[in-house]
Length: 110
Image (cartoon, rainbow, N blue to C red):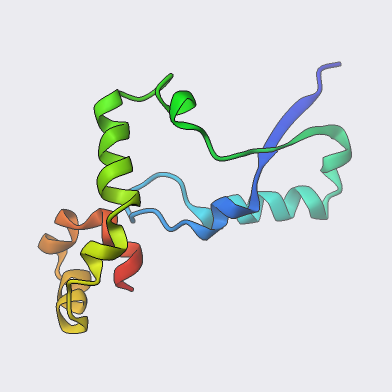
């Protein structure tokens, strides 16, 4: 009989992806809760996932995409967002046209 593997890291539930993104942290939490509640973890090979390194990411993603994330999303996110006043942040959050331009920063605009 084959054994099923299961990867989980609670840190992923701290991320909030855009509304259009297929990964929903509520689903991840719910699935994990069900696995624990039904005591299925004894029947699974459990792995604690980890954050991927730049080398690991480059096995699947274009280097220019990784550079973009590294330079603009991770490093400068707070610096860029802090340039906006609260009223401007609210307008971006509430305006569907602007929202699509600033998806990367929506988590901070809440």
